[in-house]
Image 1 (tube, rainbow, N blue to C red):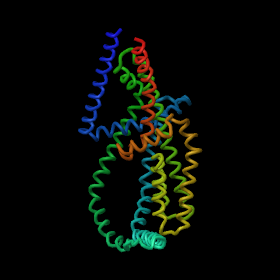
Image 2 (cartoon, rainbow, N blue to C red):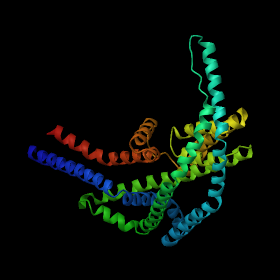
Image 3 (cartoon, rainbow, N blue to C red):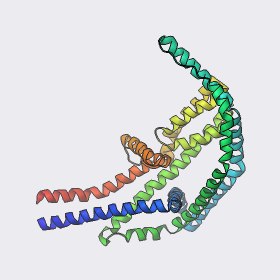
Length: 358
């Protein structure tokens, strides 16, 4: 019995070492070919996000290849319409925002003076130096504009690179969806025969969790941004498209995303007065709550099974390690860890019980 246990322990240590070596090798390779890794990663997430729509059409007896083609035709139309409709409006609002930088500097300067006076009235011994933020903003706006013009070439090159990556990722994701069964079979062949059924089941569950989360998050974030843009435009806000886009991206970042968006909205609303600041905050707060309580349960379905503490840890840890992508994907990554633990823990506990019994 002791010999069998030592053999099993040695085998387990061997596979742990092999796994660590493989992870280090993958990390080293990703540093050598970052664009290739980016293309495959983006393609995988597009495929995950599109898959629930494809499965829905297939349940309506639409052939798989036709369902994939229909979904991608819609995606191409959306991508084609954005430069024609959304981008010109966004550029126009962005230019208006840049031209109003001095007014924002004056507004911030007024806030600073009010805060300084309030603090000095309550704490007479406190002496806060006076800084003319408006003058500083006017002096540096030319430098900022010059730096922006100088970086246009670099920005255009980076934009072209990411445009190529996005196009390649869309084409690759189309291939992933068409050949998902073959890819799944190839994945299961990496495991021993006795483990292949479990590996296939884990892969199916992970794909389902990631697909529903990504698809649902895109739909909910888009609806949130569109409604906020429409309502703020209706009340006379000058930059509704900008704040709608910021809100759509921010809502995808759990816990802190909308808080940051509302702080940005405060600054953008400043030249239009306190009432505009108040109403835009009310619109954003109410829409975020509607999305949380109505849209998320209906579109994203049941929870992915991560506790609130786990959600906060996953969000902050993901953001610290990987930036914005980590903030957005921290929750499904935590769900992935939970799924793997659920499948691995029975074998760990059974091995522990056998060791105690011996």
